[in-house]
Length: 186
Image (cartoon, rainbow, N blue to C red; front, side, top):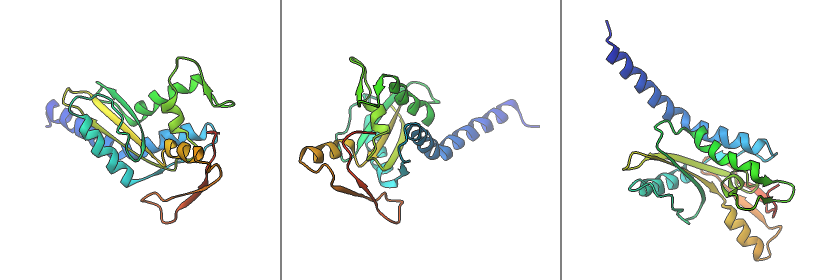
């Protein structure tokens, strides 16, 4: 007869495996639900963007300080001490900023942070890669990365390319997606 310890161990194992098996789809579903709520096309999971997120999040694991990489992708970071910092919980943290954002004017309430939310629903982002790592202090950090980055689009717009097409190919796509630059998110 299995002991309580064996049953508890099996349950923990199932929960851990389930978390890792479903995490990719959970990140994608949570992001795409937020995007759909404002009429923005869904993101595609990208293994190259995930690899970048994993590499940088591993660097953050030493102290769990949320310092942006300022690398080739835009990113959202969140940390929590909860072992069950799920994909949905991380994304919900960023979606909570929506209450301060005004889609009709692309502005947000003074003193509020909305950059995480606007990055999630940025019209020109096509590819997504997310990961979660445990820090040395026991906390967890989640990194979601977006391609192309909103900052790249903004830079090109400032250079006068307000309607230049953007060719984007996620590593899992067979054909590139051509998207026109749009200044406003919506």
